[in-house]
Image (cartoon, rainbow, N blue to C red; front, side, top):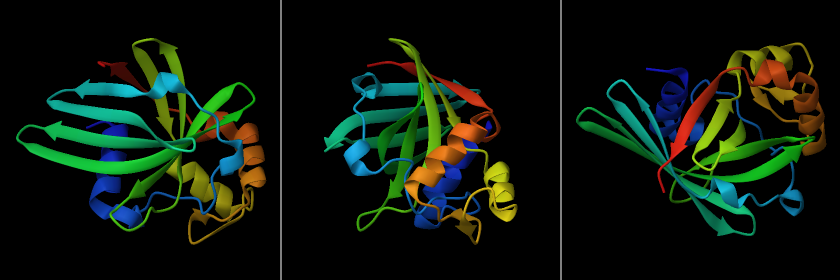
Length: 176
């Protein structure tokens, strides 16, 4: 099982607690600064061994994106609903992703993405160990392993440490 699917399954199973994945109290950018990227909308698929994952991206409201994720692994199915918005720093775009239940949404997880062409997107989840180490060393404000810094400080941190935060890309193929 690759790292992407493992992290997403942990998110689904542990719900708002996210387990050991660092989250952020604040997004990279506030709602007034959301950008709209229509290229994200549709159904994206990832296939590895016997696992197939589908990510349904749709317009939610006011720049918010709803992502419905379904992971097929043999005879079992896992799913989750997330809300996200896009932040742009320099020429790079990021998803500020929040896992949601029927009542509320949990803290933000950052995902860097790039649209390669009409049918291909590459995504990189934040590196948990790097975030935790950065908090411990005081590179970014945090508490109990989670980022508590203001959005502008998070943006500055990501710009400076992007190559260390987003290291492993996974390819998704657009099927719709």
